[in-house]
Image (cartoon, rainbow, N blue to C red):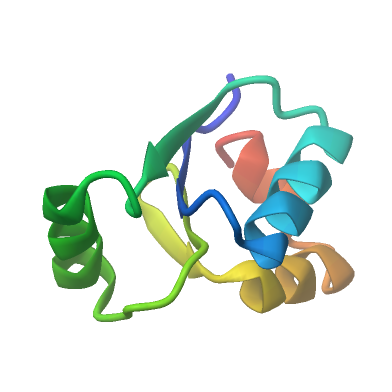
Length: 87
């Protein structure tokens, strides 16, 4: 079973788009997208959950991956696929 993916993002964030493309390229069809530029309360929740202010912030299952650079590094290290499969 595929892990649940949550992506905190804004409308004008190139790294958010890159994160989505990387995930979609890995076969992730369902991403819970939370727009923090439209909902200040969601931005506060994101900051409390992650300790970070920047987007994207990505969760795979219960694991906070971080931003796009962190996601990309996981992929390069060969660890992202297993996470996405819920392993």
